[in-house]
Image: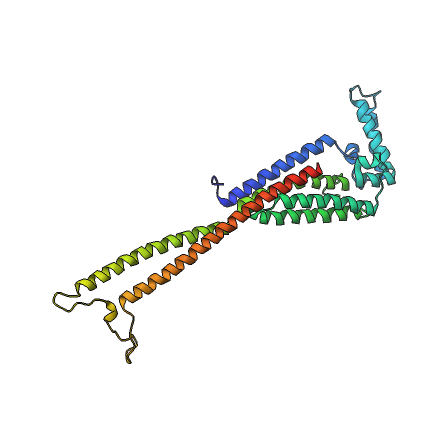
Amino acid sequence: PGRFERKKSIMYAIGFLAALAAIKTGLEIQERGPNHYALLGVTRDSSPLDIKRSYKKLSLQLHPDKNPSPDASDKFDQVKQAYDVLMDLELREVYNKFGKEGIASNKRFNENQFLMEVAVFYVSWAVMAFLLTMGKKSGSAREWVFTGLIVMLVVEVVVMTSQQNPIPSWMFPTLTENDLIRIMHSLFPAFMNGCRSMGAYLYVDLDAQLRLLLLALQEQNKDILMVLRDVQIGVQTIQANGLGGGGPRLTSTADLPVTSEGGGGGGVRATPTGKIRELQSRLQHSNANVAQAVQSLKTEQQSSNFGFYGMILGYIIISYLFS
């Protein structure tokens, strides 16, 4: 903020946060290694015959008797494991839904268990997101975070309950349902923190602006009141000294009966001193109202500070309970 224009600052911030999230997710994917499809060089739509051909080709290249590389044996075992999984239609479906962990635990899709796991995961993140986006500055960020959370929930339910992988094969030919869900879960913390940062940057404190406006109005009223006092003193001085050299002296402008502007009748118009006093009275009343409004805003600010401290305390307590 301050170095670039507002629009450029927002674009640079979004790009920077997206780059950090991409690097973090890329490192996690690299640490896990390629999935079975990428390892065999096939796609999700490949037939058993295509998988078998690719396996024979790789097995000849990586067989320890023909490949002197020290890690040839490990790679050969990985290719053999991927081939065994993808050639079995039941294991292939389990791998697509639950990954290597599902194969190791012999997991099968159960709707009740799936809904329970989804509920625990998303309720936990919803509570965490609510706690981290409390306060006035995070109002918009909370909406963005919960929108992203709902979209991620819908995508996960659709992907996991579909009989066939709804991910376009022409876009991500080797991406499984489990890979997509892992990527979404990995990107969500970065998305939430990005929303919090952008929400705080874009936040406009209307209360603070109103407070400054009221304070400026209050100071302006004070200046006007001081000018009116000077004018009133000057009018009274002129009255005390008389309007002319030899004319009669007037002790008060209230003794000047002047007809109303509409002419006719015997209506009496207010005297200059009376109008000044009336204007002074109105400004004093307005000044009192402005002072009361400023005081109420200060009280609201103190209450919001207590709410912020309560949020921090609640977050610490919940973190301790979960830990």
